[in-house]
Length: 184
Image (cartoon, rainbow, N blue to C red; front, side):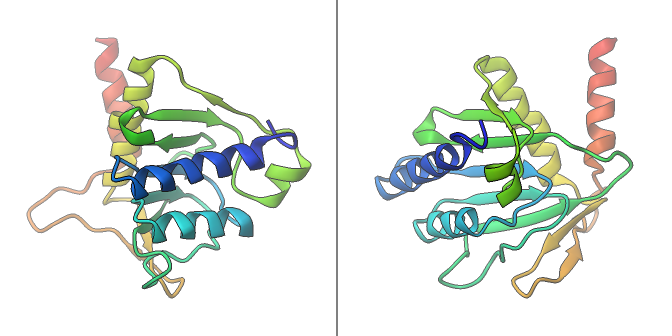
C-alpha cells in the first residue's frame, strides 16, 4: 500500500525477477497500467532488462521509459491501447521463477501514486483467476493489432498491424466477446 510500502515492494519484486534471470530460472514482467513516469521504477526496469528479463509494458498514457535502446532496454516492449473503453485496471505480472504472481490494484508507476496517495496492489491468490488474467486478459492486450500502438526507442508511437493475411485483433472487443460466450 502506498505511501507506506508500495515503492519498496514493487522494487523487491522486480529485483527478484532479476535474480531469477541471472540464475537461469523463468523470469518475465508484464505490467498493465496508465502511466510510467517514476524515475526509480524506470531505472529498475532498465536494470531488469539488462539482466535479460523480458518485459512487456501496456501503458495507456504517459510512458517516460524508452524501450529497445541497445544496452539499456533491449528486452522491453511498450504498447498503448486506446479504444472504445477508458480502462483503469492495473495488472502486474511476475513470472517468479515459474511460480507466477499477479497483483491488481489502483497504482500507476508515478511518484504521486507511490509517495503521495493512498494506492493499493493486492495479490491474486486464486490460481484460476491468476491464469485467466495472464493467459486471457494480458495475452489479448499483447496481441492487439487494431487499437494498439508500439513505442519506439526515439519516443515515437507506431500503430501495430496484423501480419499479412491475418485479421486485426481488437482486445477490448475480444474480451467482450469472450465474456459474452461465458454467459451462454
